[in-house]
Image (cartoon, rainbow, N blue to C red; front, top):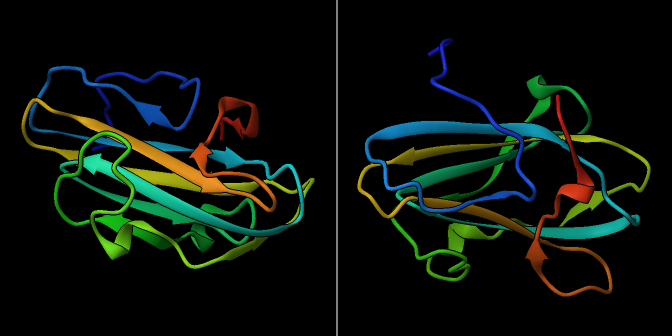
Length: 133
């Protein structure tokens, strides 16, 4: 804690298999919704993960909106009911703090976050809608 082994900027809110085991990761930044409306979020991960979202830019207001209690396959969105958030109203032009906490145990590591915005299909959150903290 407080001394990460490394960091990187992701092209989308997803990691691929690294072949490592027994580690924890924290992905954090801001999400920028393209349109105003109700959004739903999903998280998939091996082995466990939490998805937190703030009501604005402050990390202190972030609350868990979804989670993975046991391993899922990559982009397996429907294994557990806890993987999907309730609808969340987001405003275009605003930034919202988002964070993923991921615990990895074996070698099949992965984590991904998808969202569904008004009038669009569910998709992994692209880097075009993300920025660094």
